[in-house]
Structures are given as structure tokens and as C-alpha cells.
Length: 377
Image (cartoon, one colour):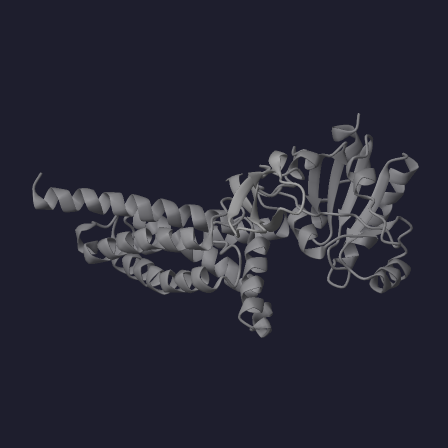
């Protein structure tokens, strides 16, 4: 293989590697713009720039769209002088940033692949090293990639791709993500999601010191010394199998007195409606007036349980219930965890015996009878 052929092969490999990573990263964030928004807000809190919260959503849509378009243009060979430049500068900025995040750990998960693939901050940095190398190689040899069509038509393709990626984010923002990567997705058994993925297995031994000679000795749990001849020094633990926490950890539904009602509602053997409104001050009030109150009344008439879960305070709950005339019960849960259930405020979830049957954003909540015919016969 001569040098030119080798460079061409490496250029194709670099473009495929770079393109696939960028397309995947951009797509999984583009279909979940609110998830990306929450991650930006985590960064703003960590760096003390809470004043940037209003730009979190536009940044989320812009960044995911930029990644997706860059990945597609590099992979397809569209406008390589432009896309190679932007891709290289993108990685030149984010690789040192991910090194900083890996060292100082301001957030536990960088969010580079949304909820689709969660990797450690150090793994993110190592991944970016390889992608930066691919980006540099593409940039250095960009002249070898021929235009897909013509210079003018390629710009049309870039414009079309940009419009489609923005449309995708806006569609998923107004409705729900077209693919749900979170533990509360339709079909999941929430009881199973609350169980640790892997229990810790460890071996213990105990170090004792002889009171007369000062010698230390290690004993097993079933063979500990007795009497005054030995004194305890320390316990040693060797972890054989690491603990992996549950996908849904420490989620609780609390009534106004602080009693845990989680099993009563999530484990309800009959059909159960959960209306998720993580923040009542920011929730869509028109949805309650136009759809939710009537939907809840029909469910109650049909002896189907309907409750609201919110992260708001008891005072805010009382004010909201009085203003919106909501006779159905409200319960409290952690607002951050409620955001992972459904990307809508409010959003409706139908469950039965721990299993998520269906979910709707507030603007897509159907008539009760249609839900009954489809899911509750």
C-alpha cells in the first residue's frame, strides 16, 4: 500500500469515526432538548453562572444541532473546508474543557451522549482525545475530499440539514422525545428499575494486636479471638464486586404529613394516572383548565385513581389548587427526579402494577374515553 492510498484509507476511517460519534451525540440530545437544558443548568450552577439559565434551552438546541450537522457534513463530505474547520475548532475547545471536568468533577456526568449512554468524565476525556486526533487528520487532509455535488448545492444541503435538526428539537420539545432513553420509558417495570443493578460483594477481615507481645494478626469473621489477650485494631474490606445503584434511586411519593405512598400508587394493581408537574409555578395552567380537570373528573367517575406529583412546596400546592379548582389529590416528590419521568410540565403517565403503560405531554393528552378504549379494556 503506497502513501496516498494509506492516507485515503485513514481519512475515510477518521471521517467515519468522527461522523458517527458526532451524529449519535447530536441526535440523542436533539430529541431531548429539555434534558440537554437541565444539563446546561447543572454546569451553570457548578460554575456559579446561574444568570445564564435563560439561554440554556437555546444553547441546548444550538449545540445538538451543530454536532449533528457537523457529523453529517464530515461523513458525507459536504463543504469540507467549512465542516473540517468547525469540527476541529469544536474539539479543540471541548477536549481541554472535558479534562478540566474530569479533574475537578463539577458535575458527575458530562452529558455528552444525553441519557442514551452515560460514561464517566475521564472516559469522556479519553474519547475526546481520539476524536480530536481524527478531527485534526480530517482538517489537515480536507482538500482530498471532493464536494458531494457542487459548491452551491452543498450549501443547500447544509441549510436543509440545519433546518431539519432544529425542527427535530422543536418537535420533541413541544411533544415528547421520539426515543425515550430514561428508566421511566413506556413498558418498563418501575419496581425492577428501583432495584440495584449489582449488589456489592465484599470479604471482611479484622486486625487484632496481642496485648503482651504487640504482634498484629488478621482474623476472619468466624474466627475472632476472645478474652483480653487480643485487642481490636481495624477492619479490612476487600470489594470483590462493586455496587451498581438502581436506575431509579431514592424516588418517593410523600403525602402532606411526610408518609411514603410510593408503593400504594406505583404498585397499584389497577390503572393509575400520575400527572407530573415538577414546578407548579412554571406549569402550563391552560392544560389544567382545558383538559386535565375534565380528564381527572372522568377518571374519578370511572373509579380510576388520578393524582398529581409535584416538587413544589405545600404552600404553593394550596395556592394552586385553590386557583385552578383541582379536587384531585396532590403529592410531593423530588422535582429533579420528576423531570426524568416525563419531559413536560405538566405531563400525564398511565401505569398499572408498577408498569408504565403510556405517557403524554400536556398538549397531547387525549380524551379520557380514547385512553380507556386503547389501554384500559
